[in-house]
Length: 111
Length: 125
Image (cartoon, rainbow over all chains, first blue to last red; front, top):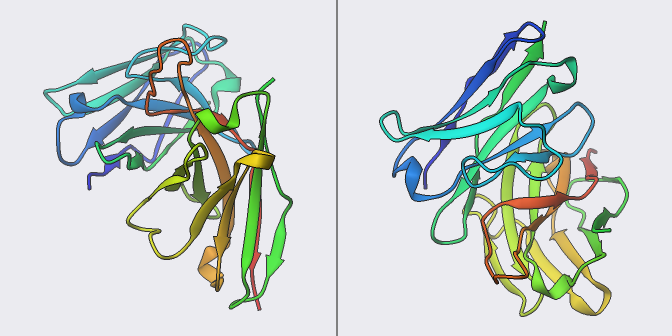
């Protein structure tokens, strides 16, 4: 099966933009949709992006997703950073056998 | 309102058995896949397996195949995760998750739209 690798941590100041990458180890990133989940400390994860770039209702448009076939990676971009965005973020994809894979997770710190 | 309500925290000894539960409400339980996700202390999310309560079709992550059993009782809208012999390394938070289903189109995207509150399992002698 494949793995999804994320940077361990990123940090930025309030109001700035941060981008988290998610690199697929084998197979094309474009072959299966990528989702992103936010997990605040002590809470269950919630979806912020599904199917590469779709936002569930209630998620602010400061959150956006994309994929880049040249680097075989997906990205989550958070613009206009707020202190409430401080959390762990996980990408997730799957294969044709209904096997789901989570990324390694990235801790976002708002300085 | 859709809810996944999990059973309470457990403290067990190595070698003991355990079954934790996840009760779905506010939607048609038999129409949505329910999965389980492990999060070890201070670590990331790991997908364990998933079940379709409508017909009990079950899939496991290769990492968890043979280590746990996933089941469901559709009569009471409840999914289960069980161990026959716990190890200290099973100490973790376990979340149940619902796979999204577009009821209008019959489309099953591969993501989780609802999560339970988590069940903390501690295995210690």
